[in-house]
Image (cartoon, rainbow, N blue to C red):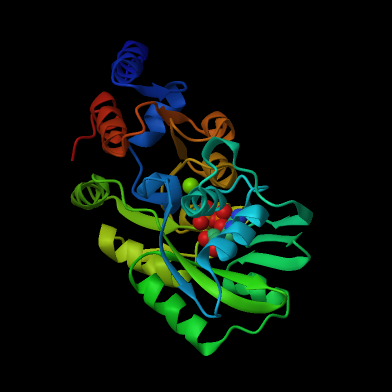
Length: 298
Ligand code: ADP
Ligand code: MG
């Protein structure tokens, strides 16, 4: 392609809300044959909501949620926000709402939170957090978790003073276009892979819904980047699509990093292409534009 064609291509992208940071990004995009998608906030809407509560102990829901929310109120995680938001339903004090004080707050990245509230030790998070804290997971909690994950929801355990007292089901639905985007990419000979920090059960259910066969779950940020490098070593030209801080190492490692416009600043900075409208369809538009510019329409 001539420099003029590249300039035109970049301009067309910009006019459609696809910010391409330079000619190299536009060029690499036409060779992409593998795309690694982050799950939360990329394939899914990214606004999780609590959809179910199962108490394992005789407890008032209001008290249960007050303690869980007091612990989670200190966390920035979307799941924490979902729990705090839902907990408000059990209170009448509206605008003036204050949670009980949380002492010794600790956030365990990729696992959950821990705090002392009303002299009780509250732990909210996934199975591995409970196991790390030497908390036994009762059989009924295991069953509820499996059920929740089968429904493509995330199960979160709540423990009080060393005992699991409840399981929350949190749902973050797929973006309406997700399934179609994956199937169009397939028809363009581009293989899609999903990576997520979420558990295997939920990840597999979501992948099935969206039509992705290859999944990596319980992935730390460095695992996401490692997967990108593995695909490159196997001969793929790799695009990574993500929105979070935890996606930035993978966005940098990829041949083409694509950030969702609504994502975090760090992801946007790390990317080569920014999808300003946050539409997943624009992944296809960007590749199309590159293929047209470099006249490799197959
Ligand atoms: P992702 O956002 O890709 O799902 P994270 O690494 O942020 O991945 O989190 C992985 C998992 O850790 C979550 O699915 C959840 O089970 C658990 N987790 C993380 N933070 C919290 C939190 N504040 N409260 C409860 N669970 C959490
Ligand atoms: Mg994400």
